[in-house]
Length: 99
Image (spheres, rainbow, N blue to C red):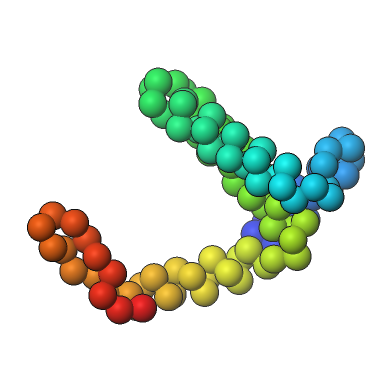
C-alpha cells in the first residue's frame, strides 16, 4: 500500500465511523494528543509505543487527506532537501549552514 493509498484509507475510516473530517484545528489537536500518548508510552517504557506511533501516522495521514496534501510527494521532497543541507557543530550544538 502506498502512502497515498494509506491517506485515502485513513480518511475513509474517518468517514465510515463518523469521525471529524472538517475541523482542521481539531485534527491538529488530536494529532498532538497522539504524539503525547506515543511519548508517554516511550517514556514509561510501555510495549505500546509502536501502536501509539501508528496512531500518530494514521492521524497525520488523515489530516493530509483532509488538507489535500500528497504526503508521499512532500516526504520525498523534504527528505531530498534535508539530504542536501549542510550542518556544522559549534560547541556541541549542530547548526544548519545551508539549505
